[in-house]
Image 1 (cartoon, rainbow over the protein chains, first blue to last red):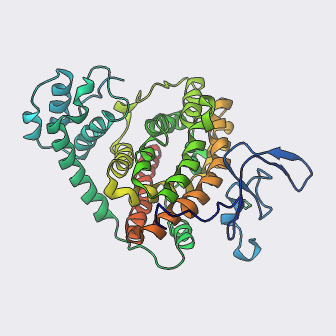
Image 2: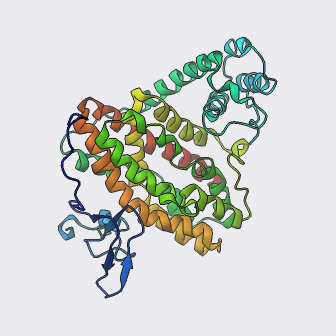
Image 3: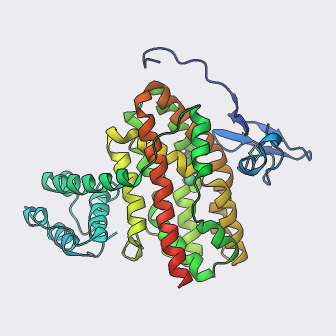
Amino acid sequence: MIDGDAAPQQPDIILCPGGPMLLRGDHVVQSPDGTSARTTRPVSAVCRCGKSASQPWCDGTHKVIPRKDLP
Amino acid sequence: MLIPKGRGALSDTVFELMRTDASSFAPALRTLADHDEDLHITLWALYELHYRGFEDVSDDLEWHPELMDLRRSLENTFEQTLRDRCDESAPEGDFAEAMFAAVADHDGPSLAAFIHREATAEQALELLRMRSIYHLKESDPTTWVIPRLPNTTKAALMELQFDEYGCGDPNRLHAGLFARGMNRSGLRSEYGAYIDDVPLEVLEQNNAMSLFGLHRRLRGAALGHLAAFEITSSIPSRKMAQGLSRLGLPAEMIGYYDEHVEADAVHEQLAVRTICGSLVEEEPGLRDDIFFGVFSCLDLEDRFANRLLAEWAA
Ligand code: FES
Ligand SMILES: [Fe+2]
Ligand SMILES: [Fe+2]
């Protein structure tokens, strides 16, 4: 892309293969156990593998679980 | 901060000339470094003129032509060393996958794992003092890169840096979180306070970040280094937090690492996908340099970890 061209539209959500869902902006996210948490940063990583110890946020644990169990 | 203590003929000469505001640095240009530590403390101090400077050195020296000459010659030596150490060529295939794999496949010693289960409180404090050289100016070396990037990469990097700098709140700035943790742990939190105590490996880590950050030519390496740093942070930060809490360190210090569990789980994805990913798309020729930065980051941390673990085992 040339700097003078318009960039493709910025996604609000990015699904990372084998990893979290990146979420841009301010949101309230409900964890599997029903508790809710509000985002605190420009982009947040929501756990998709179910194994994070910091639900609902990703804590990098998806990198150490078997490939077949990954989202 | 005052100028550090010299560690050999070169740094002794340069620092003395800097302190006395000498008009010529010719004697320094004629002096060879006694050893790597002498070279790296000199280079660190020359870089520091571009960050916060020294109370006992004139601000005018920042762009002194003879100091620029000296810096350039030390940088050439260091860059060559880094390139010689990097024997691996950039992996092929999907960029994000290749990058995560390159870091995952790298097998190195882990200071975080040692802090987690085995370290004494004294060893943990020693590690924090050494880490403080970087964490008290966390993210600053990467900020130099911003104006040198294509727009997409620039916007992506700002999204990450904004989080590192506290999203506009000085109380959340990562360097500030670390400083508060240091204070509460009974350590000195002023910028550069422990520079005289850190070994060669810590100087090399810090100088590599400044070298990559300050040269537009090395922007690929700077962002590759950033990515490797972020990829190796979340899980080790969890271990650090648990280790420090096992040792009864204050909540503020543990909080710094807790923040990095979550923040860097985001940052690693951004660094690889939106930052390095967009850079390599716009400037495919930088792929090798990006991986040079990745390798250097991992290798420099291995060297530091090996050094400290060997000292602790002795
Ligand atoms: S997706 Fe990262 S820990 Fe679950
Ligand atoms: Fe940080
Ligand atoms: Fe980070």
